[in-house]
Length: 182
Image 1 (tube, rainbow, N blue to C red):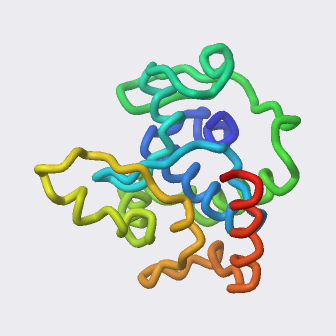
Image 2: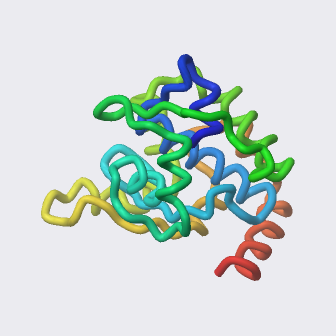
């Protein structure tokens, strides 16, 4: 979140935009390298895909991450109802070269979009569409854990170049993900 916020005006970032940029980064990295950048778990919600630990951190709720509260308080400040600001620059030693490459590519391709546009974009992907009927049924709960295997599927409605991996690469990275992270 700090890395993404540092690439915004005044280092401030809207919560929803942060969630969607994290999702796009994790989706792309997983498809290219067989692991996510954040290690976060995702939920499908009314406004799209949401990384749960990132959401909990910004809302002041406990997370499953070790040392997350100390890191958060040292690097991020909530400055509005739905906005946070990076206090420090990110520690680039925390990132691999591939993490930085993907984060920069996501920023290049999607940073100009408004939060609502990113939310609408997330509704075009299998990881949200799989849960659409449940989300739209008001008698159900409002969030559903996402099966990360859906990140390996292509959208039939959006053809963002960032997700143009070959079927062969997707097969390999999905196998890697299953071998090491499931």
